[in-house]
Image 1 (tube, rainbow, N blue to C red):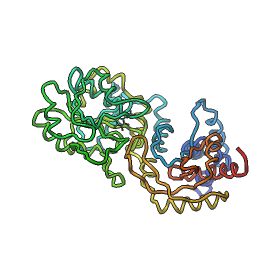
Image 2 (image 1 turned 180 degrees about the vertical axis):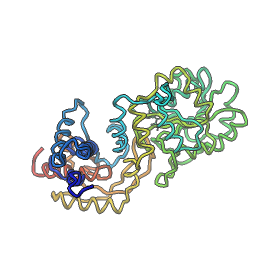
Image 3 (image 1 turned 180 degrees about the horizontal axis):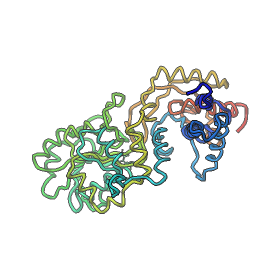
Image 4 (image 1 turned 60 degrees about the vertical axis):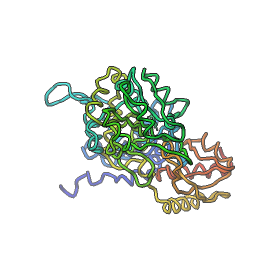
Length: 440
Ligand SMILES: *Cc1c(COP(=O)(O)O)cnc(C)c1O
């Protein structure tokens, strides 16, 4: 390569991202979109399609085009400290997942074997990635969401039969949707055992019999029962049921695939299967950190019955979801995992530096716990810090551009940086200053 190679003149990513126009676009469109425009423009320069000194302009033109994309969805800066916020779309996707969606948007070999020229297993890449993450599972299936995974288990494995479940686990998952109603809508009968606070192994064993489709364990992911309580763990239950040839299905909810020391009470697929559950169901867009999806993992025979059930076709996911899920599983740590493991000391320094830089009066840095949210790890406080401002900041933050959602607590507006991308801090700081100066 000669020293005069024009490719050497291609501007670096950090230089391009400092461009005022691209920075402003980042506040509106999100940094993943801007980074991807920058990468595309650099790639075109590398391929000799455009001159190196045109890279910034081409990237600017691309983000300008993207900002006209016809969606009424608006980007939100999540300053609530709640990581998996259902009202804000749960898990933000990784850059890798966004790139995968862009590829999948065109024609792709989602169920085509290019070598053989014939149909192939749909979404094999995503299923293989799941299998690699959870070797304890013999088989995997992906459906539309966690509720669909559970409904499909009920229909395929227990229609017209009993699902035996503890009264303490019949949860409402949000927006008025209740798991018992969902299960009964499939044609399975619910056989409730135990009481709200206490269920014993004998309660389960007294209820199972020839009419049992399966026994269900549901992780009560959005509430906690304290005090005089007793529940039966998956291991103990599975061992007793195995002798009777009855399957145990566990809805673990938030989709942790491996144990996470930061969330000791949160069940994960690997441990639950190792304890003896035959099938595990979970969401893809909570702690798993990917797109909306329902993940089914477990015994090959049972998962195959679910896959072959006619209703599976009505619950199947599209190529975009499969692409994003595969990229999430096989790519770098997810946004959810990264912010979940944010160090409280670092958070404090970051928040202090941010507050100093914003420089508005009546702003203090206060200890403020974050939360997993989205029906996950209830009662687990994630130690952190926030900028505390007068409550009057909340409405203009929400109604300005970009839309910023903070937490209102005890008459103060708490701006928590945990779920804010550092690249978005300048936009956030600028809004706070505008509001402080009396602007809207
Ligand atoms: C969130 C949740 C569901 C529903 O999952 P979706 O992906 O929202 O459909 C079901 N069960 C449990 C235990 C949950 O936490």
